Image 1 (cartoon, rainbow, N blue to C red):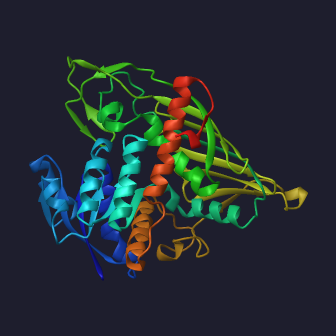
Image 2 (cartoon, rainbow, N blue to C red):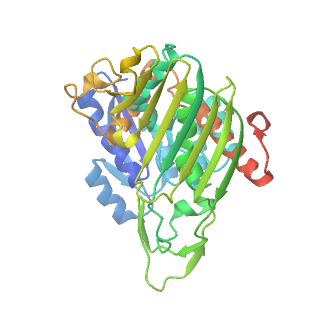
Image 3 (cartoon, rainbow, N blue to C red):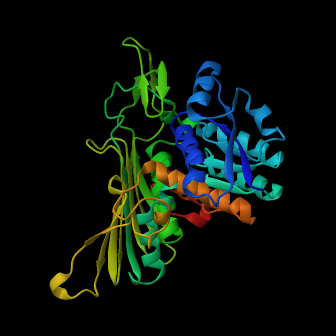
Length: 386
């Protein structure tokens, strides 16, 4: 198998990111399976055909059920809204297709478990889209932790701050409707933080949280694309049914203490996705807005030069860097998806499960729902209870 024939469902924000990754993969990682961008699927025929031409897909169809049943497709890429993930994934698994599914895996834990069970029963390769794992600087943090250079890990604190719905007149987009999105900043932004915590530190044992919806109603959208939308001046208003901000504390199975904050109401923060990890021998700090950098502090440094150093993760010693540019020449958001698709391609070629896969998606969903239960019942909730 030298080519990977792809059918993709969705063509907006994530659809563009995935399409760019598929197009770039063979140029920079020629050893990978060559993505064949066969069929793109969406509901609006006119917009779909425009997207197919712009993004480089050979064909466009409006019926995803037809797509997943086709014999000329190896992989189904799901980046439609969250409420569509389960039905599409179950059908794709039944048809024996490999699956890439954007996060969060499903609207709830029960659905995500059903998706995992179906994928495992079908014996397919399955992957969930936590792209921030694939930043070279994040991989460096992982290496420092696993090698013991930071010692015993005491603290993991993370925050994902945005401000794109700060205006109370911003329209009611699908991400603000629980029946479509599942949850708000918690599932959209917090899910990334939870996955990074699992990837870097280990399993969460118990949580306690709080949340708030600051703007209860918004004008109904007449048009929405990605994180932008429009509404008429006299548009009727609808209820916001998800959280605008969620914060929670966590205790990890290995004794690490964690704090997490996800909000869309942090003025001045376009997409501040950050974490700090403190260990007995050192610390690391990461901010995705400066994604090529990792701040590193080691207690073994001589006292007169101790302090955080800025490490630019663009040298051949850093994951993926050799495929790109000379040291010091940085990469961007889109490259995390290319690295993500490289992991998917390699896993299919090698007959293994990629990381992260649906098991990681289920594990993340369990923490998301434990936090929601904690908020509702005002208590610490063990993940084992979910």
